[in-house]
Length: 147
Image 1: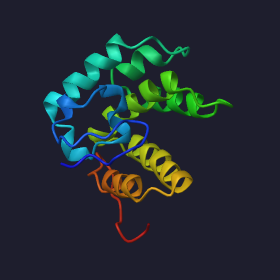
Image 2: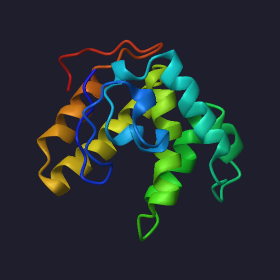
Image 3: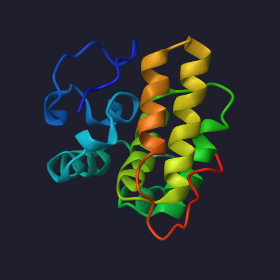
Image 4: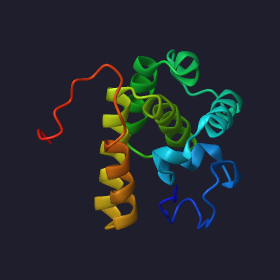
């Protein structure tokens, strides 16, 4: 249960998700095992308290609907300029669905973390992406040898 260190998120030595500064930054730094039920409740509360994103899918996304979360996140990621005040809540909704085993949200989280790792040449974030890739997927007959 070790957080990956991210220059944007601060350097925290704690492994307790509830002690990290902002739950909306956890998607960038925490391995899946760190998001236990208590941490998931904190993340859900942070999503409810977050400023609404300009998407009709946002209410459903922050309640944990994976289809809505994907729509919101793809819209936010497609913007010309990445804005943390939009990226963090959108990716936090993705993270919440991913930790619950949604395949599409796991794939999007792995993709975004992988891009971050390559852009920054950051091995810790690459390891974080790999940890998320290994999350068991709900309702998916994934052949581990195909990727």
